[in-house]
Amino acid sequence: MKKTLSALLALAMCLSLTACGGGTQPAQDQASTPAPEASASAPEASTPAPEASAPAEADSDLAYVQDKGTLVVGITNFEPMDYQDADGNWIGFDADMAKAFAESIGVTAEFIEINWDNKLFELDSKAIDCVWNGMTLNDEVKASMSTSDPYCLNAQVLVVPADKAADFENLESLEGLNVAVESGSAGEDAAEALGATTVPVQSQANTLMEVSAGTSDAAVIDLLMAGAMIGEGTSYADLTYTLNLNEMQDLPSEEYGVGFRQGSDLTAAYNDFWAASVADGSAIQVATTYGVQESVITD
Image 1: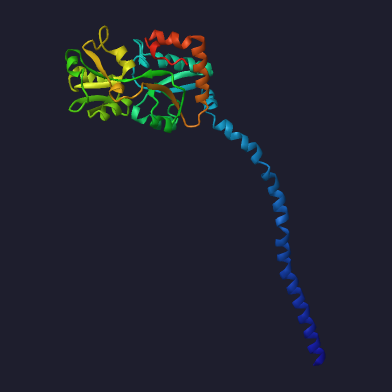
Image 2 (image 1 turned 180 degrees about the horizontal axis):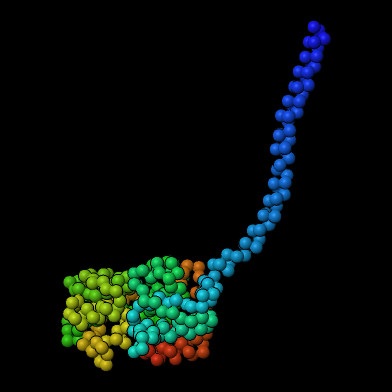
């Protein structure tokens, strides 16, 4: 019996040792697994170096435009800055300078008419690459876009029927008038500030149609546009402009600039282009073609 008991105890000890050995093996296997995993991840740790240089190229608007071969310019119909000739080609001071800038960076200019209220959305969505349309550099524009150095001076003026001009010469406000304005424009801001009831339309050209048709008492548009589109020898010979709204509000002349996406390197490329165009006289030559040479900023 004792021998049998001793044998059973010996067998139990062997089984116990075997069970402990089996239990520790997985623990040893788990302990040993991190080493190969750590060495496998080592090559991945070195990958950020080449990736770090990629965003500079990916974030370059200039490279993006050059890669697709076109500079898409957002505009409205705004003579003498952007308008179409008899063949439907976009011409004007801004249009011609946009073509020259595009050529300077090795691409071609493509023009798309936009709703002026949606210019920031069109820009940020990359439907267009820049806004180049006699755009006033106000605080809102400067906060939402990367803006170029100013290139032209401008003011807001009141356009009225020529036979009623005397009635509008000494106004201290525009209260009581229905004034056509381009929606989202500096003209709209100026008219509202002087108490007018504004009639927002899609473009400055449309404001002239409103006044000519008698559906609005007056319009507020850019001085540069008024000089080109109304009066003798134009399609609106029956219209004239009287008041300078900047002077009425004791505001300085406005400045035009080109708008690019925030952080865009196209802004610096444009500024270099503009400085070179002023220096070689080509900017003034184009401006003279469209009668805006007195407004060009050359210093």
